[in-house]
Amino acid sequence: MVLMDCHTHTQFSVDSEADINACVERAAGLGLTAYAITDHCECDAWYPAEHYSAEEREMLESTDYKADYEASVSAVTALKEKYAGRLNLICGSELGQILFDTDAARIVNADKRIDFIIGSAHRIHGEKDFYFIDYTQLDMDGIYDLLGRYFREVYELSQTGLFDVIGHITYCLRYMKQRHGICPDISRYDDIIAETFRTLAHSGRGIEINTSGLRQGFGATFPDLKYVRMYRELGGEIITIGSDSHTFEDIGADVGKGAELAKAAGFRYLTYFKERKANFVKIEN
Ligand SMILES: [Zn+2]
Ligand SMILES: [Zn+2]
Image (cartoon, rainbow, N blue to C red; front, side):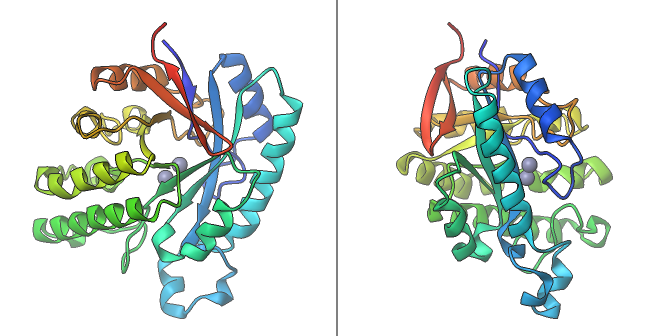
């Protein structure tokens, strides 16, 4: 079974303190086929705070991701050299909210140091990050309205092409369930989700299986087996696996289960990106 972790965070992400040198050393010790550092770069907060209106600032939990981005990419680029031959280290970025500032997203896409871009939607227009939304203020109509807008924006994201894979599709469900036990039935969005998958399949881009939900009490990957299978059946070929670790200890967490799930969904190969090109590795030899 091939093991790879293509979604991890380090000290250069606002929500992680994981020492980057220790992370890389651990990844080398785990014998991962591929290991990507994908620190956060939120396109809606690319500039210092003064750049944004008071209204916009209220939605942003921090700004100036440009500085974090530069620090992460410089450090990973140096480590790639240091670990050459010992670790397949991938210089990635988790690009959040591409739809909010496609110019910022294009700057990252043009950076030759970048091997791999995950496009993630952590918030949608007019809303705070899903992490910060107070779900107790919403009735079920409000929840479904929010989810409908999320899946619509993920579809719009798929059309931009400013990424290699879309990160943790269905992430919007995480905090509703984990904090409040709210478990909406998302099958009503299957048409737009299918359209997103078709767009990705036709444009040579993909999705990830994000295993963080397995260890954080959600009880499933983002997305789960039903949607990974749907993606496969609609022609999806590119699939990466990521733990979304924010700590040294979580690197590689449940990535074997992620590979099993990909196999159960009909995949024979996993993907990792180098120099923005897809590399396919057999799940089982
Ligand atoms: Zn994310
Ligand atoms: Zn992440």
